[in-house]
Length: 76
Length: 359
Image 1 (tube, one colour):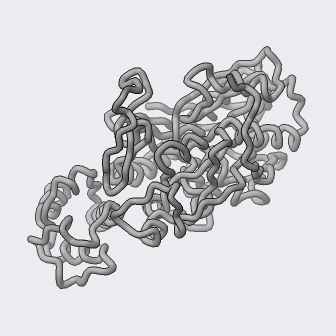
Image 2: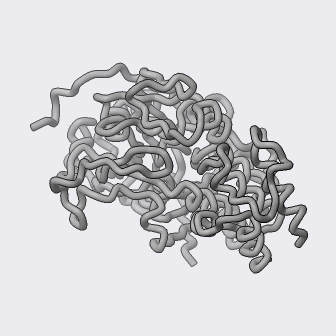
């Protein structure tokens, strides 16, 4: 599983935030555009791209995109 | 493995009642409980719910009553022959008695009537259908009504959730020797009991001085008599469970689920339903949807979708219907309609205060 690709997929869920903002260390909940609706998009993306079903707590307990990547990676 | 099959029963008809009053999600009012986290446009884009039917006066039972009267008239059924009634709702008229008892009398059904409430939500129509089918399968009772929905309580006391609409449906089921009947799969995961919950007002947390204090959850204000939802948990539950239960039903009963003519899913939200459709590789034209105009109507959503979208195309079709949600609870049913099935026109009801069955 490629970290940069994951970050790119993550960034695609945002409409109003430039993709260049996103790095593995990005604390995604601090992004203005972040909302529970985007949380749904992230869960859908992970399900589609990696065949892993994240739960709400997986997203809530992650601070950075890397945290989330590690959860997904451990379940692929 | 919770698989069930009941033969010699058929769906005679389906009707749905909704309030005439429309609430727009792109133009919310002070009555709507809108999250500060996102815009109305973003909400509509994700959920697909543009508008829904709301009423501060019409109870679920009023909408079900309207639908049932229409359906009984369209079918030409003799009311004295209806010997069972199941009412599925999370918004009963009273804490007690069961609303099914009130509806037996209001509909003018015989006192020789089996009547019971069931408090399931999104999975409720499928569960209720299995209950009436099991009652009818022996042929002792010939005709039954399944009344499902949620309404008024959703729109009062604390703000209306823009995802949810009001509807009350009626499904007429009858014994018929030789009919193919229904094939079911059911499942339950009570570890997710708080994924969708109304915390107070039951025996666990009776109403007290703190019940109506508001707290903020994901940008929305809730008191403890309002139902709240862990959206991301429900989403991941829906996209993983619904495809599995549909596949299991086909595998168990030995048919290819892709052969069905229509797949009617609980209308949860558009993003979730699109994911489910994709995972099952279903063509869009086989998956009718009405959430754009009616929102999520819990146990009413499957029959409402059939009434709203398949009015003239429901006869002689192979259906797979799947409900999933609060509980957590899920159920899938496969059945064939025959050429005599009646789908009543949508019943739209004006706001009115009822003067009957009140104390």
